[in-house]
Image (tube, rainbow, N blue to C red):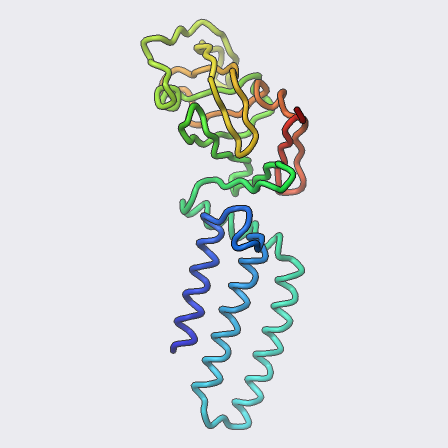
Length: 233
């Protein structure tokens, strides 16, 4: 029972790493940390199962051999495919609503996010000191803020002037041009970012468009991952 309980704790710890872990935990990258925690959980469970049978029969011993063989094979398979396992578990945890859309920052300053189950890439971005979720959209000519986010980051509704026409899926509408003082995607920081504010109720997601994407060194999709690179100063 103790082994099973400890194994359960390790599974929860792996989930916590997925939801809130940074680029490294005690020097161990998140993917390896999750793999080690899951391997430890299974090993503890198997050990507890064996201990509970203090007088094993031949049948119990044969069962133990089979279970350990399955464990070793599974361990090898999970480690080889650890990136896919990590991404799948992370998407699952994020879809449950635990933790924000998390970005991984490499030592070189690249910012990487994983495609969500809905098929989109989402970022947690700091706008004028306020964290906000953004949808990656290469088709948007500018960063676009929802009316709610615009007010949150310091743009008063009474100061907005809806004078910039844009074409949406529902037809032509007017937006309010603004300038964001500071926008940060992890370590990638932009100042004086041109943006548009949508009318209340028109937009459900903030859009990360070309007024930021065009100021990057590059961005590329690698399978289920999107990688952003800052321009070298």
